[in-house]
Length: 124
Image (cartoon, rainbow, N blue to C red; front, side):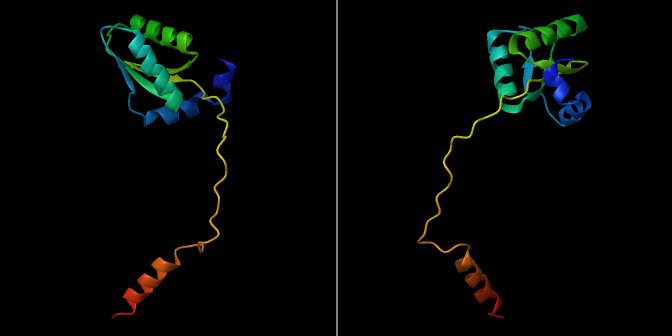
């Protein structure tokens, strides 16, 4: 087990993956560059993804899992049937956005909305 995967316990990753739907389907063409690009995009966006493989051969699916993990720097979490679960932790994102500026000419809150609601309730 690698250091990255040791930081997040495998049962936790399996539990998180349970509700996921496959992000990428690997068809009869196998691991093309387009499939690898989609896998990389999925891992970059979600860090934990499910992949469905069309192959009936278990050794082929295992070879796909090993190649994906090796080429993308990911870690295998689970391989059940035709479903592969892959994890790659996202690098820490540096926030460079400036804090929001508060406009001085506006009152805080939605007092205008509250007045309209009160006016409607007093009609009856």
